[in-house]
Image 1 (cartoon, one colour):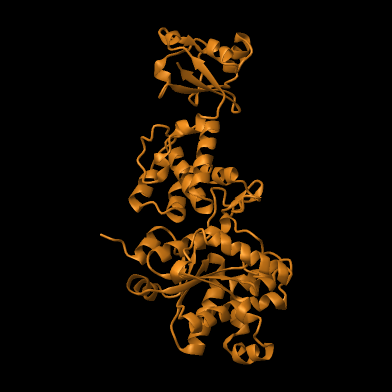
Image 2 (cartoon, helix red, strand yellow):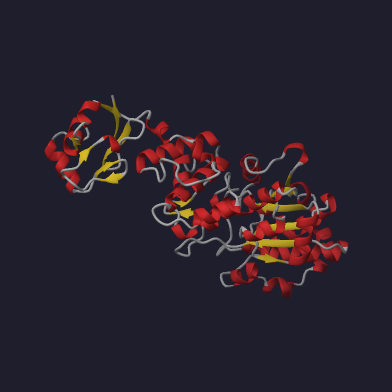
Length: 427
């Protein structure tokens, strides 16, 4: 039985707050809804912290609804105080316009804009022409200053101080919803948890001005196991632009998430079926690492492309080890179609005669003869220090003999530490 849109979004963890859950459920399950999600172009790239609303829009579109992707060419000039301890730097109009163009290119990888399946709009197109007195007269009476001060996005900033410029942000975002409702019959706004006050204000403004019912929903604030905001690393934000964050580092960010976060992130950031996600999330260490590989591969496909994801998966697996080289863990992901042996093609190789394996070859001898160590003594010291690996399994026994059982498709991978690698090929 096909899962309905609302139930699917709910089960996957996209909903946090809804202005009217029953009305939203009915609309998403029975109607073709035009909805919008906004992004202020304060940089020329999105980062992983932006991806939750992007993935929600993608999933809603796949369910048959129509997304309006709004970039805040005007609101970025004001600065959203939501979730910020201090005011954003003021950007020039030229910088904001350039950033907006860059974001459209990135968002096009997630959202299908062909054949009017989605709209891409810039609120500078209407807000830049609004006269201040007209805005005060037409919109001002519908906003209570007392209510605005009670909103978390404003209240939290009252401690450090909020400028009148930023105080107007809620009004401008609400006006966006009103404009989109009038122009495109947009009936739903979606956004991050910190946008709740802005969304509620927009829903109320549309009702007051037009008499029509529209709705809003927010997504949960994602945090990691340490309670830190999701999407950050020790080096800062994880960007989608490969000139800011390499594809390899992007992949590794997802590959290195905490075990406890695997199921939740698979639900939110991949399109894998529900039952498959539950099975992958229930895996125990070390098998859970295969679920992380799948998550990293799928997210890299979306942000970059399938070829880059394949190359990065093979590069990371060759360097650090593959979690499931024989594809024993079932998955519908295309990662299952990638041969891990493809990642060893460019590695330094050592050809080993099959005759030498009739009684096995001493691991110490193989380390030195393959060129990973300069002598048997160095090989012994490597093993003693825990730096010798055969097919990603640490060798602790000085007397270990390598046999044909250690080879798959006539190949095995021998490592001295993490960087020195040899592909051992049977001839």
